[in-house]
Length: 595
Image 1 (cartoon, rainbow, N blue to C red):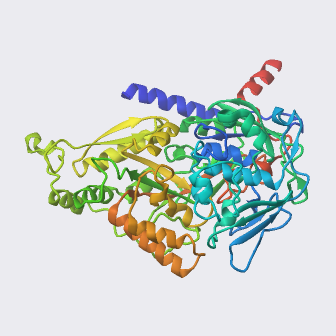
Image 2 (image 1 turned 45 degrees about the vertical axis):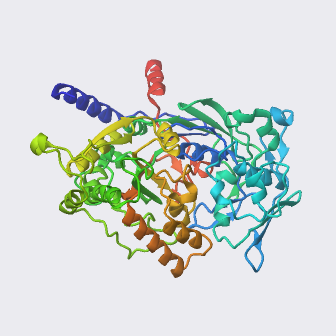
Image 3 (image 1 turned 60 degrees about the vertical axis):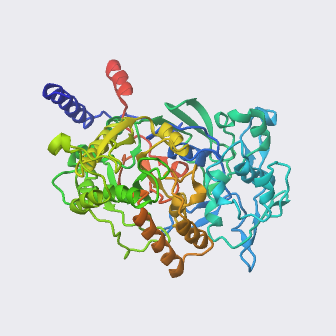
């Protein structure tokens, strides 16, 4: 962009920013309906609990479907509580037989699959939901939660059928579910708080078949209303929802209007213009617009604070990392020369610059896959891979990645066989995506590696990643549950083609993971996690980046807002104060014309 265009863009941005500081307020706003206005940063895929694993879809699904357990909204540290259960589940002395007693009188939303009526939720619906994870036609990314763990589940894996009965998954009565495990799994309660294990009605799945993700029918706090794919979604309060909080029937609002906003600038300006009731994780490229640059700690600009907005920094259970495809012929493999190439890239990454310049100080460098506050995190662990350009260059030299001498000082490195070496990194076509591309370009060029970038929507990149068609991509993982297993499974060989985008499959790592997954949080398990982190740093399928600290801002009229470390949304608990929400642009224009 030339200087004139940059100046024009800056003037437009400044003018917009100045304008939103003096938004008119409505003289009166009707108490009903209460409409929560929020956003998602990427488009949803399909709203099928067994299939979806992207953040946008999971955010919607946890409001549409009902798992047996949920997290206590206010408890810190986090703890689970009964959701559709009458009480917390019971477990035998061996830790392998779990019994769950459902509350009677809960219903799925009315649907033509039930003849247009509501239908009661029973234990059989949870049996069906878990069996769907085994269905080879669905290819669920959540199968790892139960595969090889439920007693007799080999019958489901070898010759799948919904009529197949296994001892590990039984409806012992209309409202009684029993799970029997091969070995104790302390993580089981966490799995049963995920959207993937929410109750699913067989009639709905069979009626809509492969299109069931376009017809979500659950028993959660909301039902689907208007839905324009990857643009906007309206959720309507479920009048029959069973949940209560602090003596009040949930949800507290009548509907939620969700807008898909992939462009960072549009999100922030939309929030400042009163279009959204809160914004989470203000992107680093936009923080100068809302944070006071003169303060050492993150503080709102005075003008925003005067409008009653509140900044709430929040340590997210999230890890950013750049993964490299271990099966790719250029960058993958376990031989010393391939390890050297990936190690050099990891050594070239400058985490301090990333945190200071791009994250604006709202992040901490990642030492292991585990962010703080996740069970198994060792605050004393330090990565052996630190920023060292001289070492990175020497490592490439030693393993035959020589610079092309015919190009002089500008020469890029070649493969050890002398052929050209070109790395390809996928990225997102957003402002932050472009900033990240520039950081990575400088990183690669600092050790004389040529890189090209391929931009696409994140949902498309993830689909290609699962098929092994992407060489490198920077992404992040948000905890599904606050346990180290949820992060270390991302590198487990059994999850190649699912969440293991790097396609890392190392026997030494796999053996430690399989041992750790059967252990409760303990010093012994933490030691195993340290060994797994050492193997990650030894082979470098990932370049570990940061754990973000989210800059969350809420409007003064939003009530009960508290970010949860694990659950994706808090929509069912949020409320709106009457008579204080400002007019949006279209409403203000109408009032102006009337005056």
